[in-house]
Image (cartoon, rainbow over all chains, first blue to last red):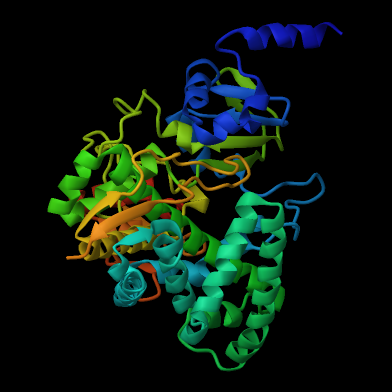
Length: 432
Length: 64
């Protein structure tokens, strides 16, 4: 009976952390004060309430991302390497394959399509889609950026890369928005999300069958016709793969674009003037956004063996959460980490595709992860966001936020994969 | 000094090709390959070491 009392006393101390804070609305709205307490006072925090460990400092997270022998994305089970499930709303997908050879095989079916020459061939299509979407609202002089622009462009791009028929694109966008809302907000949104998923599954079935017989040059054909040891993926696995590409390739870039505009309109309107003078600076807006308040704040790992950290031992098969959103604000690495600054001199700005982990260079942001599960769309996300923001800025002429005050960037749930972005962002403009 | 790429480990991130085009090249499907494997030149050796150090997949292997 003594223990609860001790805990109560401990949580009254300013630097102690009550794990229930992670579930509170204040944390979802502004996680940064808690991140700082973690970094300064609990660099390895054992969260007994959620049965997990927490890392928050830059180099600890960087180390865990890189150490694939000690940390795995998937869940180990005692009598075999992985536990596969289909509990995910998207069905079975490659992330459940952890660090296994199957994960690498699945990933490399498409990974090469998002870099290099193949990506370059897709870029004119990205610009064309931006023009089409902008044309739907340009004459109005006002845009709700999230619903009318950022959640329209990346999903159309990825469905185009998959080779889905363009005449069905609007239907696809509707399913996608319902799915994403279902993941984020739950409740009635979840029911509509699951319905959208089922309709999308039914839509994909005949397409999968056709592409399996007569594959084309598109991503869906690559996925259905890829073989490992003479076997192809099942239709369910293909659909899980497609869903993951929609979420990873659509939703993240969608929210990245919204976050970039939020920071330009509300956090640093002075630096938006710089970007207007030199649109190439959108690249630095992207990088600083990915540091300051990235779309994804948390990644999970499971230890594959005992790991010693900060003088303590984390046991094998323990859950560990890497708050890359906290590592990005580590004052041990970045000067004035709580200042959004696109001209920052201590962050690797990644104009070229360089990880920033070069010893002679500057540290990069942690927003794409590092190591075996490093974001495979990192080049595409940056280029797509660049094109979309440059096109939109060019079309709007002078733009300003409609509301003087904005409720800010939020996340339905950082810990369960909730992405951080503004729910709405209304801009008014005078088309040039 | 010799360098090789383990394509089973490789993630097609493109980092090596983007940063060290003197040493690596990329196919249209994103697969990297080496322009040379025997590194006599000190500059090339440094490039190989840097690429191996930062490869997100740990797929670049250097043999003395």
